[in-house]
Amino acid sequence: MNAYPPIADHGLVGDLQTAALVAADGTLDWWCTPRFDSPSMFASLLDSDRGGHCRLAADLGDTEEVGVRQLYLTDTAVLVTRFMAPGGVGEVVDFMEPNPSSTPSTRHRLIRVARVVRGSLPFELLCRPRFDYGRASHTSRHLDDGSVVFHGPDTDLHVQATAPIVLHPDGHDLSARFTLDAGELAAVVLTSDSGDAATRGERLGGPPPTVESVTAAFDACRAFWLTWLRASRYRGRWHEMVTRSAITLKLLTYAPTGAPIAAATMGLPEQIGGERNWDYRYTWVRDASLSVHALSTLGFTRDANAYRRWLRERLDAGWTASGEPLQIMYRVDGEPHLTEEILDHLEGYRRSAPVRAGNAAADQIQLDIYGEAAYALAEAKDMGGVRGWNAFAAVIDWLTDHWDRPDEGIWETRGGRQNFTYSRLMTWVAFDRAIRIATAYSRPADLTRWQTARDTVFRQIIDRGWNDKRHAFVQHYDTDVVDASLLLMPRVGFLAPTDPDWLSTLDAMNDELVSDSLVYRYNPAASPDGLRGSEGTFNLCSFLYVQALARAGRLDQARYAFDKMLTYANHVGLFAEEIGPSGEQLGNFPQAFTHLALIDAAIALDEELDRAENLGR
Image (cartoon, rainbow, N blue to C red; front, side, top):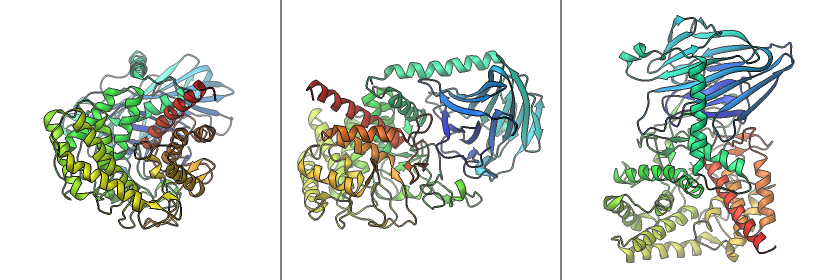
């Protein structure tokens, strides 16, 4: 087992309410249950000693050379880790049974199937749960040769195995060794139960698993994903990557509410050994609203509408404690309290401390979220009825009096508020989309006031967001630093993608932020953000750059940048938040923002390439 495998050396499995990471050596090193944002049961990714893990892999010691390859079964979230040795070829198949129910579940099953397809291979199982981020003690009970239950403070873990696996408890852990011949398989079923403490012990893990029941669960999981993907309208050049990104966005969406999270993990560093280690297991209004656009474009309208309902509920819930209509992020059930704490008992990924749970940025003011919310809602034909419209219109009325304020900005900097150009851009979007909706559907609105605000924001951006020295729109009104967030300017319709001022801005970004087609968010040295250390190129921005180039007609440059960016995907097509200086993936993993931007970039590039081909260029 690698104490800290590279962040990219993982695949993701999930059941639409929780998700787990499996490293390329067969180690399950991250699983929070019963929800994405629950405390971890396995977290050796953040502390190899205290975090806990469950490893199921070929056991050949140091005597034989073992080749390992990890892949997804095509168009599914079924993950296969294959072990190839002179004595045989075997696999560990990991999956969770999708639960698209609108009712949160307290029980979740992760199924691990070992099988041999050629020759004979020995396997080893080692299960070391560590509850509540490794802070809580637990007890265990050995029920029979194939069943052990670990009792944590709020959650139980039931480990059940089919023959020929015999589980051997060892204090707070368990292990097993077994050999399979060609055609044989054995399964380990991990069932987390966070229900009422009085009944958890009675339910145990359910009926003992059999080869037949595990095979049926596998077939059902595979069928779910193949059926879900039938809604996709994508027929472009990058089908495999777009499909994988769509599946990833679905895996990162909490089915009971329709709320997408930003990433499956917390605490993974933007710089090894640095302090930029955040908790991304929550729903950002910004990220989720842009995810809706990507899913809608692909044809997944039910998923997009589920999020819109969640967003309308946040508007209906009324003003936050800080006096804002919306908070920038919430828990997946809409709970606004995300108190940040430092888990100082965890050493962090490769000693990257502090490890944070919760996110203090939830209390920041980021005015752009009103634009992204309006952007998502404007694409729907139904605003949620009269009450839904009234709640939305009340927010726009409020925004007419509160848009002209400094804020922390899209990147959640902790270096003080500024008049960020991107924040102003998205308040313009909020007014623009609200006016469009009110006009198209004859909704009651103070249109004169909204139009005045929209036009005032526009003029302010042109007058103060433009920097004559740089010949570009810049990060905020008191700097000459450019910022990649402004790559969304043409996409939201503020400027045409071939407008001379926009092309000049694109050139300035290319000079300052682009490194061999990879794009930094901004230059922290030139624009201090209140944090120590540096960061890598930001994958979201790299894909936004592709989209901007394509729409600007720079197709050769756009296609090169896109193809180059795809080479940084991991072995199963997943992206973290950033690419480090040595090409390594950094930050929380996998990141929804990256995958939604990949989808949008592929669609834009397809459309522009098709248009050019039709024109005979």
